Amino acid sequence: MRRDRTLALLCAAFIVLAAGGPWLPQWAMFIVTIAIAQGLVALGLMLLLRAGLVSFGQALFYCLGAYAAGALGRFGGVSDIFVEMLVGGAVAAITAFIIGFLLARYRGIFFGLLSLALSMILYGLLVKNEALGSTDGFNILASTLFGVRPRPEWVRYAVLVSAGAVALIAAVLVHRYLNTPLGRLAPAIKDNEIRVEYMGASARRAVHVKYVIAAALAGVGGALAATAVGHIDPEMAYWTTSGEFIFITILAGTGSVVAPFVGALIYGAIHTTAYDLSPNTWQMSLGAALLALMVFLPEGLWSLFTRHARNP
Image (cartoon, rainbow, N blue to C red):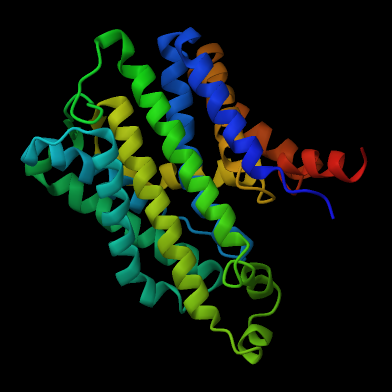
């Protein structure tokens, strides 16, 4: 059997990020931080995709995590980045646990559209809520780390390393989860859910658990993005935001917990380059990239690594 090097790869990536971060320009630190936030959301979507489920509403939890982080500072004066991410993930997980009893009953397009509808309901509520800034949103407090506010030139680096640490922990935990009996049910649910029930396992319970985990990861990602940007608005719950997360997940593939972060970085690079070269038609570049991927790499970019592993 081939040795699993996932944990070593994750640790090495974090070390490189922490050691090389100070040498990156401020704009690059920001792009990498946002990519990590999006990668956390895609990591949760990967769990659902492995079970054959596509959620068009992960922006719901992404936005909930962001607004939870913003509310901590606006109403409680709390600005610690780890507390914001923890609360953002908890709020998203609790919400998903409640609505998961409904969503876990549906499959296919019904699951996707129902999740999308819930996300758009949140968008509508936020747009009408003047206390939370309506369509303009509001700024959040500057980030602190264990109660200490870094100097202005070190803020982005502190947020970047914090994001890397949280992403490392999340990826390791998801990797462990995928090796549990409950985690291994995903391909079986995708192939034949009836046989899963005949084996004595509950497909509905497995989907519910995956949905809550995916929501928690999206909430953490939303809180991280809010901290990095310093501003939140209802657009974080809009359907196009969910579309970006699905794009990243398909781009990356579902072969490893490392793949969502690689896909998010590549997406960020394509997005930034395309917008810089052609601000009015950058969507065409993303569409062309996705089309090429579906034609030449239907299993995502990570399949390149698995092919190399099979044929060294």
